[in-house]
Image 1: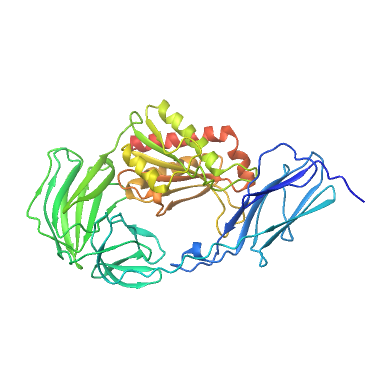
Image 2: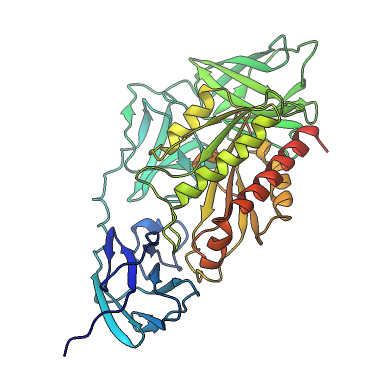
Length: 485
């Protein structure tokens, strides 16, 4: 006996496949989809991307007519549906790699089975370079341990001394007692001879406008990293493998740079300390030009007028980011909020640039390079969050702010505090080594404006008044930062 399917449909995007059942699909947006969540017990130093997946995040929606009774089980587990049919749930990864969805409308049952592809195999092991002096034609990223956070970024052409190697990478011997790690896949060139060590840093000359300095270094270039205090009143330059041959420092009659001191440390490691007028600088950049190092300072503006801002709507193009149960992509929401922020900044006199203004794919490196090309004073990357690896999508909520360089600490704090007056819970203020935050020449923040994967929060995020309110609070926080309140 045949039965006529009801006027309803389950619409679920799974790995690019849209599944429908029913005689008629009601109008509506495409849903979210299948997201793969990596293990919650990843060991320190282990790359979670290469680990075996243990759970799935499944979201989407069932479109039904008002008054129809709808139910859904995913992998045998009942799933709560919102009144409009949206859902989000996290389940154990099926051992047989079959995702079974049982759903019913007015007691008429349906079943959809989706075969889950195996995760891509880990790349074949790469034989790390043998110990000795090497260099690279591209800038490098050194981490604290294999698979751990990046912390040091030598310029192209910087000589490095490799020690022993493991499957995860090669040990870099910066100086005695200080090491870092290069990924095993890094392309390196062998040096015919060792550079002069220890390198000798010569006399220091401060630019006449007080917005930079330079010095020569026999045996350079060297890896160098820059630190600043929370008030951006002191900059520390640390050069492993260097000693001081400094007989004078020529200071400038004006500008934010008040004094330059140095201190030798064991290793050898040379520390240069630059005392700044507090609140006068919001960025610093170091760059080797042959054997000469140049440091340039970015003076802080004190109003939004002519402030040069880059807004970075995250994802885009082939990279949708997370997708809400209604089918709204993070990339779409990121662009809408960034444009709302930009409009308010322009009204206040700022010069606003966007890393993208449509749905195109932009690499992380290209986003940072764009900020450099327009000489940005400030960089804000706009995102909307997914669930954490150990989080229930219905319980994960709120906004968060991320920063990395010391010049970003103050605006990050003010932005985080300002958004507390918004519609979402506070999910935290974080220091984190994110690619778009690792910019030295300016404050660079990443904002997770809300949690799109949570269907309850998605409802608010889709409302224009939410973007109006958040953009107003964001611009208000940036004004407070520039005033130095």
